[in-house]
Length: 402
Ligand SMILES: Nc1ccn([C@@H]2O[C@H](COP(=O)(O)OP(=O)(O)OP(=O)(O)O)[C@@H](O)[C@H]2O)c(=O)n1
Image 1: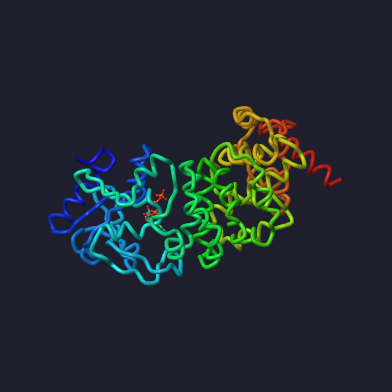
Image 2: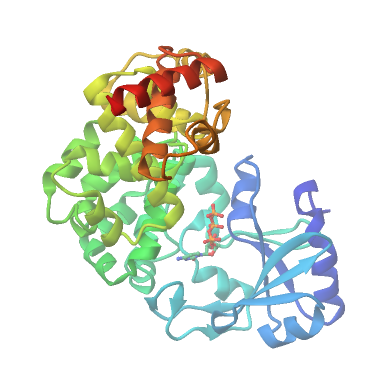
């Protein structure tokens, strides 16, 4: 019998078997299930070819057809179905050069990165675990399937994945696996920076960041990571930060990287790591507010400018960099007590200025006035009240006209 979290995959597995193919649950979902963790995306391995999978299921997306993966949509769920295969070397983003499809699930498992990721389960719940992944899960060990040199040469990103799993699961790294990283980390330089950014970002959004950084340190892997490779002092500084919890967002990570040494520009980090827009926006916002906060302290305008959506991220950032002993609730409370939370809360807008001064040409003064009014209201020097704002603005205009 399949356990509850996998039941959604049962109809897919039954369909494959009715057509005469094998099917096994594999990968991270099986690992997480046996580690008693919530499972993520469900991966299924089969001996049907990608074309056959496309023929069998009505709704499919060829997400990685060259290396054998078809996404199957069914009943509101999606499943990645991958044909049994062995890898060639990865030479591009998520793209091994010479994938060979194989007949046997055991061969497929033998090409996978770590023993804990090489457990398969059939639809009756029978487990196939030729590399003792379950024992390694119990002993909390990250160990490659077979030779670490082979596994890491096939795809050097696996070295970084291993460290990410340390951060995610809090496991130890097996000593031969660690030793191989020490020897092979330079191969990471062959990997596309997008894949590297993706893995590093995941590392920091999991819990055991310091354990993971410790392995990066003992294996000297930082010497093969962009920018860290030329600026050794950066990783030394990074190591001294005590990460008590996972970062809420990868943007905080890039904010930290830049703030470790502000002489290395944000642009350099963003360009080198090809940071996504979402992460870039967050990092820039946090950095600007952090610099303001350094200059002025946690004033009302600074808290206003951070904004509610970024408040927890900012709280994490200052906690990590400045060891500020501040409770998040206190910061949230200061935010909640701001007289306005955004410009939309102002009782007036640019049109009111135009109405008050119909003979005045429209122009930059409107924006400037709005900025000033907004600031005075945030600092409670003026109330968010139409009449009071109007009379203040009329005073300014009168003064301007002399
Ligand atoms: N470089 C890689 C990437 C993936 N895999 C195999 O493909 C499976 C699925 O990979 P992926 O979805 O990238 O990661 P997960 O292990 O599922 O981890 P998570 O879902 O937590 O990211 C892995 O478990 C592993 O068996 C591998 O051997 N080598």
